[in-house]
Every structure is written in C-alpha cells, then in structure tokens.
Image (cartoon, rainbow, N blue to C red; front, top):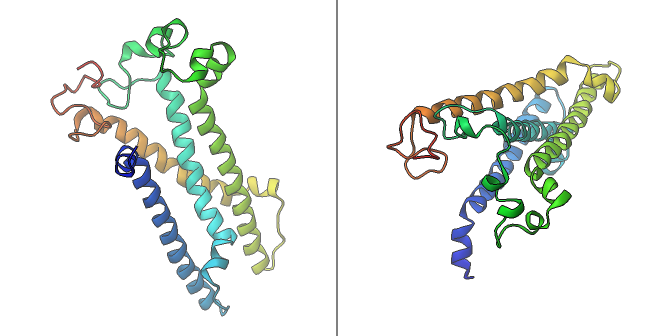
Amino acid sequence: MSAVRTLKENGLSLAFGALFLLSLVGQALAGAAAYNDERLAEGMEQVSVLRYVSSSSFGVAVMENWQSEYLQFFLYVFATVWLVQRGSAESKEPRQAGPEDDREQMVGTAAHEDSPPWVRAGGWRTAVYSRSLGVLMGTLFLLTWAASSVAGWAEFNNQQLMSLADPVSWPGYLGKADFWERTFQNWQSEMLAVGSFVVFTVYLRQRGSPESKPVGAAHADTGETG
C-alpha cells in the first residue's frame, strides 16, 4: 500500500490527531501565559511552559475535558442500543431498538469470512467483543475521571496552602463543591451538544457527511432505510 493511499484511507484519524496535538500545544502555551499573568499579579516569579504542563493546573484543565468527552461517548454508545430518535441520523430506526438479532449483527452462523476473529470464535470471545466499544469508553472515562479528581485535588490544596488553610484528603476533596462544580460544568456541555445534534440531524443536512442523512431524505427517515 502506497503512502498516498495510506494517508487517504486514514485521513480522518490523522487529521483529527494533528488537530488534537496542535490544540494541546495551543492550550499549553495560552495556559502558561495566563498562569504567569496570575503569578505576576500576585508578586511571584514566572514559570516555564515545561513546568506549567507538569503542574496540577494544566493537568486538571486537560483531564476535566477528556473525562467529559469519554463520558459522552460511553453514555451514547449504550443509550443508542435502546433509545431512538425518530428521523435522526444519529439513531437507529424505532423498530431496531435493542441489541438486534445475530443476523443483523453478523455473529454466530451469520458471521462472514472476513469478520473479526473474535466474532468467528464464538462463546465468551464474541460476547466480550460485542461490548468492547462501550467497555473501552467506560474504562477511559473512569481513568480520566480519576486523573482529573487527583489533579483537581492537588490544585485545590495548592490554593489552600496559599491562603494558609489546611489541605484536605482526596476523599475529602471529592465531597467539595469545587470538585463537583468543575465536573458538572463539563458534563452539562457534553449532554447539550449530543442532545442538540441528535435533534438537528432530523431536519438539517450536510451533503456528503456520514453524520447526516441524504439531502433528499424525509425528516421522519433516519437515513438507514432510504
């Protein structure tokens, strides 16, 4: 396979990977500048970008966003098994609600020769693979949630020490309003984005995008049945 063909066939992941790295670098540079502005206002020395990206301030800012994104996908993957939105490109047809049968999912005797090995293996391997996407999203959410709570705890205690107050334990921080304000701030935005997108795809179109129904599809059609 040529390099050009590889780039073309993996353009979506490569493009978003590059945009992710550029955005992360941008966040680090802008965050370091804002952090140093605060330090100067408080009469403290500035820090390098490297020191800033290893700080709890940068860590909590990154992890809070990552965990909310993975929560969004975790909930969406499982919710769309059972819940439908009539006419939405992000939903199955109402009659398809549920895990669907083996024929529709191409497992068991309906598996194809080019189906993934764990599908053709049957038994527990197929059962695990059948839920692997949701399990991975849930695991990544829990890991990033834990990381964001630890980074937030460290940042909270830094502020406590600067104000000559006693630091708190990690379990103690989990009961603080500071932690839950940060958490719900990110969660609510993700739920709004997903919910509004589900509804918008009922009535609006983007020609050529798999995230949209065909331009001429009826509003009541999800785009799967034509």
